[in-house]
Every structure is written in C-alpha cells, then in structure tokens.
Image (tube, rainbow, N blue to C red; front, top):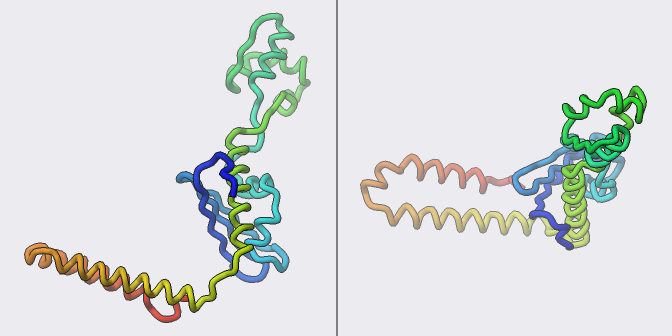
Amino acid sequence: MESHGIDPVCIFLEDYGPGKGKVTVECYGKAWSSYWPAMGERSVAEFFVGCAAGYVAKKFGQVEDRTYDWDAISDQLGQRTGSEVYITNEVELADYRTELEAIWGNDWWNNVPKRPHPDYVYLCKIIAAAQEGVREWMGQPQPDSQEVSTSFLGAVTAMRQAQRQYFSTRDKTWLDTSKGLEKRVDQYLDGLARPGLF
C-alpha cells in the first residue's frame, strides 16, 4: 500500500445489518464517522471502497471542500484598484465591497475565486488510503470465528498469567492495599473470556 504522505490510518467498519453500516476513520488523533442506512445488498466494506473519496468526505461533514483563494482575489482587486492589495481573511475582504460587486456582481461572495480547502484535500487523501487498506483486507481470506475466538482467549489467558505474576512480586503492604485492584482486573478478564463473546 502506498503511503499517500499521511500518518497511519485506522478504520472501523460496522455492519448493522443488510445494507446498513457505519464507517469511522481515524488519523493522528482526529476521527471522522458516518452512518449509511441504505447501501443496497453490499456490506459496509464493499460500499466504502466503491465510493468516491470526495463523497465520503462530504458525508463526514466536518470540513468545507472549498475556501477563498486569497491570492487570486487580491490580484484581481489590485488590478481593479491600481494598487497592491493583499487580503487574507473575510474581514479584510469586506473593506472592498464596492470593488467586489463591480468585478463579481451583487452575489460576489459566491462568485469570487475559490480553491480546494487544504483540510478537505488532506481528508480525501486519508479516505483514499483507508479505501486502499480495506481493498487489501478484502482480498485476503478472513479468519473463521473459531480461529479468532481461540486466539483471543489465548491472549486473555496470557494477560491473566501476567497479572498473577505481577501481583505475586509485590510486597505484603502493597498487596494489602491493592486487593481491590486485583479483583477488578480479574473481573475485567472474566468479562473478556465469557462464552458467546464471538
């Protein structure tokens, strides 16, 4: 899988039933998520890899796809006024309302030059990387649930052994004050190992 020039990406695919599911994508501490209630007969993985990255980014809905192109706006206003203009935000832009209306009309805010928003472009790269990873994952044989269950229970057993070893190496004073902690860890591991988890 190519790197796409981004940090590692983690994706969670949740199938809630035929044609229903949720996708959560996480990268470098930020997460985006969306639920699709009508995907036809496809699984959420099949649906996700078949979507355009831009569509998914808009469904995640946390970033605008376009932003003002301050350089292009400044250049055109500079040509219009005959002086050097450098605008970096909407407040400065409002100072040139007359010139803006002369160049782009009464709805100038809809007509001024715009460019792709850098956050949107980055999110699309993240989505493309996630889709590539899901495609690779879909191409590999899936482990059967018995294999997953066996390896998971083996991990729980190993955690329980490590816990017992850890508590057995502590002195008596520490053990007396930590009995509640040991019991809570045991309860947690019991919950992980309960039948029917998988």
